[in-house]
Figure 1: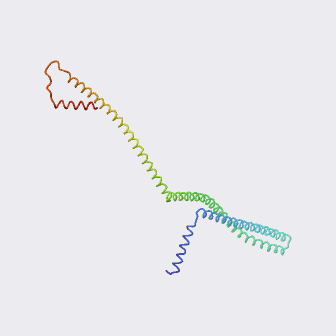
Figure 2: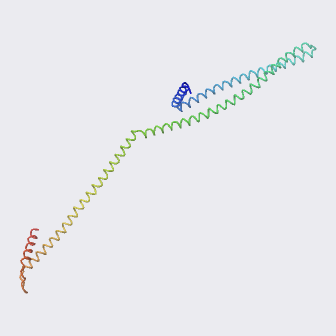
Length: 254
């Protein structure tokens, strides 16, 4: 492959790529419809021209037929009058008009066929344009929806949106952490209060028990110091007496 062929292919590829990227569906559809409308106008003009030519041929054909009939009548009249030369001349004129009429008839038939075909083509083009208009509106709506979705996806996938969503997620985690600490603090505060009341309640029980013990101990001491009326005296025990005195001093300090 020659160098110029490769360069030419490269240039064509780049140009085609640029054209493809520059094509806007909405603009291309509008331009295509405008081209079709222009073709329709040209087709209508062609049909009108063909119809006008057909009418002129029709008029010329009818005129030549009329002239041919006229000279036919004149030839008959000349023969009736006995003027064969004049009748011959009339027939010559009649033949000229008849030949022209026959030629015009061939032309007229061709024009009628052409006009009929042009009218069919015109109707088909009008139908295609009507269909193209409907399809254009549908394609424009689809293109607009596709562009809107593309822009939405671009926004969703953009870095700003991603960082913003990440920030929302971080703040949500912080809020959850704050809520968890708040619940924990409330639970701890409630537990401390219950512990304080439990301590007070247990303390009052201890105090009651201690008071009962002191009362019992004091009562026992009084009974021990009361002289015995009957029976032998208790045998003194220095160790027990010392421990008893120490317990009494301890109870008095309480």
